[in-house]
Image 1: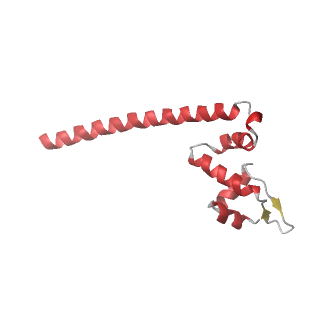
Image 2: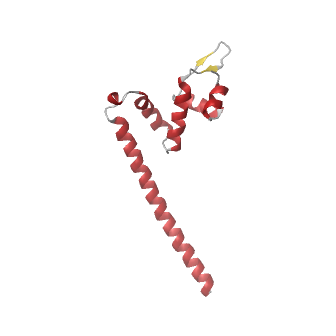
Image 3: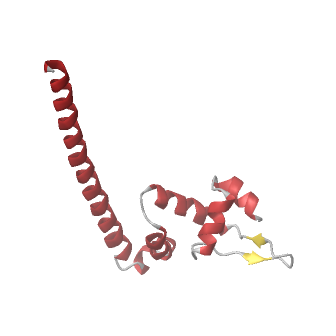
Length: 119
């Protein structure tokens, strides 16, 4: 299928699909005219890439995990589970930092409102 059809079927932009290919996440063959042609498996791969991006993973980590996701559970040797666990810990750390930042902002806002009322 051509890149436009892949974009339509996955909801990804043509630009994103080109980016995934450039980063080694997606393979395409080329016609004699140089147009990209993707096989049917590209649909599921692009959907998986988009899901992992939405989960906060970067392209490098996705490239590392795609082979694990596409292999059988017995072939993973726990790598997928370990890496996803590490990423969940990273997200938890980010959430804690955001909660701390929010708390500081609430304190500043409260102080500013109090100063305005007593001003």
